[in-house]
Image (cartoon, rainbow, N blue to C red; front, side, top):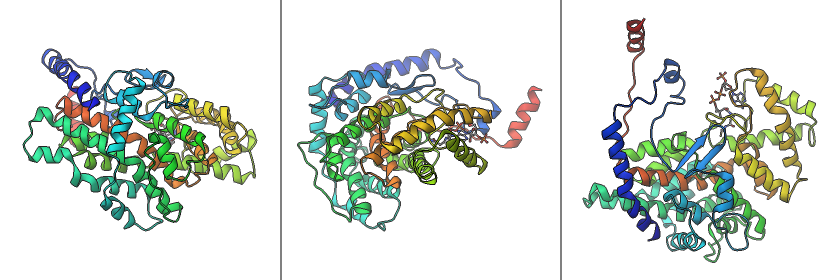
Length: 435
Ligand SMILES: CC(C)(COP(=O)(O)OP(=O)(O)OC[C@H]1O[C@@H](n2cnc3c(N)ncnc32)[C@H](O)[C@@H]1OP(=O)(O)O)[C@@H](O)C(=O)NCCC(=O)NCCS
């Protein structure tokens, strides 16, 4: 398999770099942790190394050191499309080389061969009530496939540690190959009276997903999904979902156990669910003023949200200190294709007003929009109006990045994670000893 060959070629180089780093610079101090950081979600404390992606506070996410704009330009495009093929993106995340179109297609062909979802996954999802949580269905569906894990099989067959990454890569390809149909199955069960649509092997990854949720007639929706998946594929290996998957994977749990745990983190309102909350906030604003609100109305509405002790979803970020370039990419998509859409125009009006209000609070470190500020408006335009499904779209995309980090961790034999917890008394005595 193309990716296995590429990783095999790189693996000894990566391992040597890690071994040399530890041997020669193991005592080198890169950060001192403050009391405040310990009490504030270990914010900003470097906890691991992964070269797959990095959130640059001033420029946004970089995949393999390429910015979003570079990625959009450089990755090979699906025939007839302006947006990169998902297979090429996965290749880039797994490797550090920009793929050619034929390599991107080769990944997509491999996915097609492995796309059959085991029946038990559908049974697990069917055991949920139709109005059950879409993210719980997704997480449970992914979790159930642990029994098929090639890594677990290899581990129990005593495959050597240095080869763990191979079966983990196999699991990653299997899981990502199956994700579009699993996500589509949940959509159809919840919102289309369980009318399921078979995959179409002629279509690329993103277009096939669009087809399976009944949006195959509109090629622009496939374009949106190519862009959406690309923008949401990864966001550094230290955010809640990626780090959770990494942590679970560090115990040599298989990729299905790890990713299901990561998806549970993604389902939280301060992380992936902001997608849905942002669209609902926009819709409430739009309906409250019966149309596109004026600046004064947005100001009034935003202030009321803050007075009620709530956050304005879609704004702010734990790491970014600028407008999220993923927001900008989505804005350009909407401006090019449906500039007059009323929800989009509402989101644009909010963009003009909300940063100023957040700055006035004096405490928000980043008043600028993140990608969630527009995600929902774009999906809504195409009739994907079920906001409680949006985090599933996020999860579908994020499996590409999260599983790449897990494969990389196995390739360089990262050990089990075990940070340290302190008691308040320990902290107090450490402080008094130094004062
Ligand atoms: C993303 C988020 C969780 C980051 O949190 P963070 O790293 O703690 O952000 P900050 O350091 O800027 O937070 C400082 C203060 O500003 C507040 N703040 C941050 N973003 C805010 C927002 N969009 N609306 C209102 N208040 C906000 C925080 O709640 C915090 O208040 P507190 O001190 O009373 O607890 C936060 O910005 C947020 O809740 N945004 C809205 C939800 C969202 O869009 N999530 C998706 C992120 S991709």
